[in-house]
Length: 185
Image (cartoon, rainbow, N blue to C red):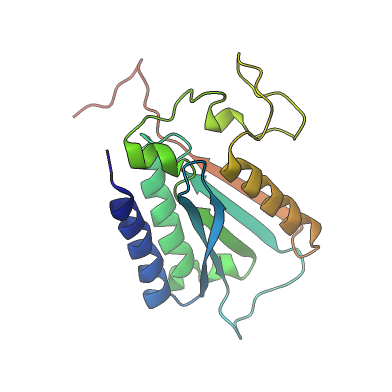
């Protein structure tokens, strides 16, 4: 199991690196407080003040990882994407889009070393459905059980309703592996 100080240091290192080396505007924010009281944090990356950032037809790229705690490859992909978006190489992307990265959605299972897969009453990944609906699993749990999922859906809806964005690109980075074709070492 990881301790919360370890997880916090890992995220803080990413966020500090982004702020230090970025040519973009980087704002760290808290998306939600998890069921166990841990911070589900993210970073908003947008074109630097004064940069040419076209306002018409702007896109929002919302990149999440860590819905299943054991999928560390997905978290590394989110780290790399955030670093790219905040770098000078990502300036062309930021001319057309703002980027939100949430590197760890299921922080509670990461902290305790759990898998997070098929958590009760509903798997994190199957909780992305409208409030009042039923989750996509056999438990038929009410939708948006997890605070982080509920907060993300509200934030995305709010951003899209603001009129600032005309397009949404949602990336959910997983790394479950393939039992039929395992990776070769």
